[in-house]
Length: 142
Image: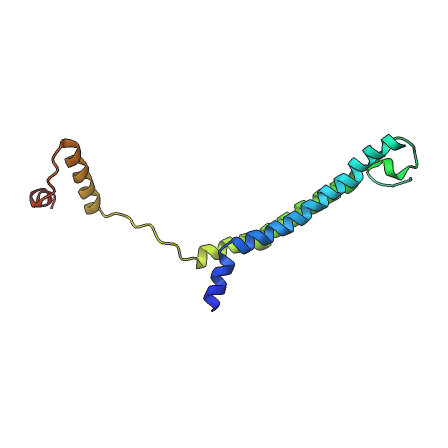
């Protein structure tokens, strides 16, 4: 039962989904900030506040809806980078290490010298037109 649970967690799908949700949520904050503080004021200036922050006023001074708040967008971007870094270093790096340690992948089987010589012999026989792989060809290599 625990082995199945371990396999489920290490499969990667659950972890990928969790990362997608967290990064998607953080990215939503960037998009929301950009829309609220950059796009909305640009639209509001067409229709015609005092806000302290990194940004500039479009149109009438004192009209809060025309203030382009770049500080909020930069803050959301920094928040996104921090969240993505935490997710990577807290979830992804340990999960990859656990996969390497516990996952059972088939090991590559290296061919022995004898196997390689037999393969070379067979290729040479096919290319020269000799298709007999009988005892004579086998004994000459051994």
